[in-house]
Structures are given as structure tokens and as C-alpha cells.
Amino acid sequence: MAVRAMAKNVGMSPYKVRRVTSLLKGRRVEEALELLRFMPSLAAREVEKVVKSAGANAENNLLMDPERTRITYID
Image 1 (spheres, one colour):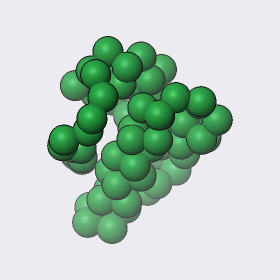
Image 2: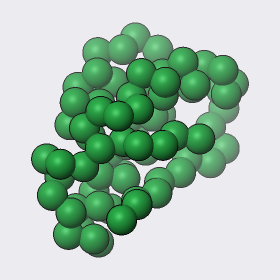
Image 3: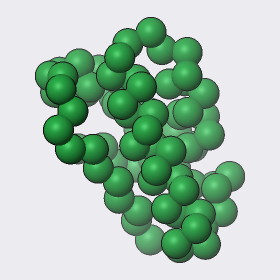
């Protein structure tokens, strides 16, 4: 089952956000959050919010195991 989270009206270029998100594909949510925590870019803060939201949605709404949840697709 796929979980989707989205951030709208983020005031930065897609190129800057895409540089951060390309590093997260295929990683577990917890591992991705650790990487984002130590990235110096402002785009990492915005992506971190979205990843946290998607992880919480998966855990609470769909009763998925947070340890096994992975990031599969980022548009």
C-alpha cells in the first residue's frame, strides 16, 4: 500500500529540492530522516517535514510498521 504526502507552496526551486530527494529513494524512513537532519540545505528541512508526515500517515492511518516503511517514489 502506498502512502503519499505533499508540500505545496514551498518557496524554492525544484532543482534544489530534487538534489535532496534523489538521495532518499529506496531508503527506510528513519534512515532518510537521519540523513536529512545533517544536511545543510534549506530544502532538506522542507523535505524532512514531508517525510515525517508520510511516515506518520503510514503508521497511524494504515497501521504499517514504521521500521519497514521505505521511500519508493518522489516526484
